[in-house]
Length: 102
Image 1 (spheres, rainbow, N blue to C red):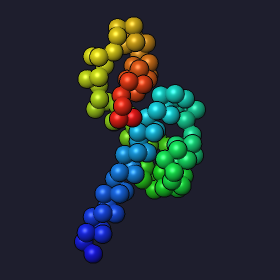
Image 2: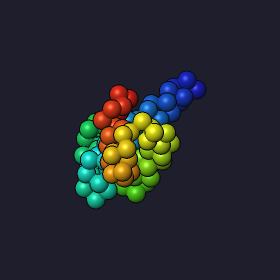
Image 3: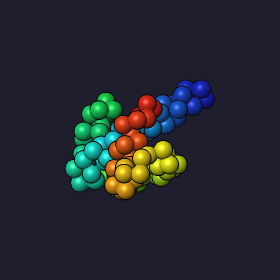
Protein backbone atom coordinates (compact mmCIF):
# COMPACT_ATOMS: atom_id res chain seq x y z
CA UNK A 1 0.00 0.00 0.00
CA UNK A 2 2.83 2.42 0.83
CA UNK A 3 4.48 1.99 -2.56
CA UNK A 4 1.24 2.71 -4.43
CA UNK A 5 0.77 5.84 -2.34
CA UNK A 6 4.32 6.97 -3.05
CA UNK A 7 3.82 6.20 -6.75
CA UNK A 8 0.64 8.32 -6.81
CA UNK A 9 2.53 11.15 -5.11
CA UNK A 10 5.35 10.87 -7.67
CA UNK A 11 2.83 10.82 -10.53
CA UNK A 12 1.08 13.90 -9.12
CA UNK A 13 4.39 15.74 -8.80
CA UNK A 14 5.37 14.83 -12.37
CA UNK A 15 1.95 16.04 -13.57
CA UNK A 16 2.39 19.36 -11.74
CA UNK A 17 5.82 19.76 -13.30
CA UNK A 18 4.40 19.17 -16.80
CA UNK A 19 1.62 21.68 -16.14
CA UNK A 20 4.12 24.33 -15.00
CA UNK A 21 6.35 23.70 -18.02
CA UNK A 22 3.46 24.12 -20.45
CA UNK A 23 2.11 27.11 -18.50
CA UNK A 24 5.47 28.87 -18.71
CA UNK A 25 5.37 28.66 -22.48
CA UNK A 26 1.74 29.76 -22.69
CA UNK A 27 2.35 32.75 -20.41
CA UNK A 28 5.46 33.67 -22.40
CA UNK A 29 3.64 33.39 -25.74
CA UNK A 30 0.26 34.88 -24.81
CA UNK A 31 0.85 36.91 -21.67
CA UNK A 32 -1.09 36.46 -18.46
CA UNK A 33 -4.44 37.57 -19.84
CA UNK A 34 -4.09 35.68 -23.12
CA UNK A 35 -3.00 32.37 -21.60
CA UNK A 36 -5.95 30.07 -21.02
CA UNK A 37 -5.95 27.39 -18.33
CA UNK A 38 -8.14 25.26 -20.58
CA UNK A 39 -5.50 25.32 -23.35
CA UNK A 40 -2.75 24.44 -20.88
CA UNK A 41 -4.80 21.54 -19.49
CA UNK A 42 -5.58 20.26 -22.99
CA UNK A 43 -1.91 20.27 -23.98
CA UNK A 44 -0.96 18.37 -20.82
CA UNK A 45 -3.91 16.00 -21.37
CA UNK A 46 -5.57 16.64 -18.03
CA UNK A 47 -8.93 18.11 -17.12
CA UNK A 48 -9.09 21.84 -16.44
CA UNK A 49 -10.24 20.97 -12.91
CA UNK A 50 -7.00 19.07 -12.34
CA UNK A 51 -5.04 22.27 -12.94
CA UNK A 52 -7.24 24.07 -10.43
CA UNK A 53 -6.87 21.18 -7.97
CA UNK A 54 -3.08 21.49 -8.16
CA UNK A 55 -2.77 25.30 -8.29
CA UNK A 56 -6.14 26.63 -6.96
CA UNK A 57 -6.52 29.26 -9.69
CA UNK A 58 -4.82 30.90 -12.67
CA UNK A 59 -2.90 33.19 -10.33
CA UNK A 60 -1.51 30.19 -8.45
CA UNK A 61 -0.44 28.60 -11.72
CA UNK A 62 1.22 31.84 -12.85
CA UNK A 63 3.02 32.09 -9.51
CA UNK A 64 4.38 28.55 -9.91
CA UNK A 65 5.53 29.37 -13.46
CA UNK A 66 7.07 32.61 -12.25
CA UNK A 67 8.90 30.83 -9.42
CA UNK A 68 10.28 28.31 -11.91
CA UNK A 69 11.41 31.13 -14.22
CA UNK A 70 13.07 33.04 -11.39
CA UNK A 71 14.91 29.93 -10.26
CA UNK A 72 16.36 29.82 -13.77
CA UNK A 73 17.52 33.43 -13.89
CA UNK A 74 21.18 32.47 -14.38
CA UNK A 75 20.09 31.60 -17.93
CA UNK A 76 19.78 35.36 -18.48
CA UNK A 77 23.55 35.44 -18.58
CA UNK A 78 23.44 33.29 -21.71
CA UNK A 79 21.02 35.57 -23.59
CA UNK A 80 22.41 38.16 -26.01
CA UNK A 81 22.31 41.75 -24.77
CA UNK A 82 19.60 42.80 -27.23
CA UNK A 83 17.35 40.02 -25.91
CA UNK A 84 17.98 40.98 -22.27
CA UNK A 85 17.25 44.61 -23.19
CA UNK A 86 13.81 43.44 -24.31
CA UNK A 87 12.96 42.58 -20.70
CA UNK A 88 11.88 39.57 -18.72
CA UNK A 89 9.34 38.13 -21.17
CA UNK A 90 11.64 38.51 -24.19
CA UNK A 91 14.43 36.79 -22.29
CA UNK A 92 12.14 34.06 -21.01
CA UNK A 93 10.86 33.47 -24.54
CA UNK A 94 14.43 33.33 -25.90
CA UNK A 95 15.45 30.91 -23.17
CA UNK A 96 12.41 28.65 -23.60
CA UNK A 97 13.04 28.40 -27.34
CA UNK A 98 16.56 27.15 -26.66
CA UNK A 99 15.99 24.87 -23.68
CA UNK A 100 15.33 21.26 -24.61
CA UNK A 101 13.76 20.35 -21.27
CA UNK A 102 10.77 22.55 -22.10
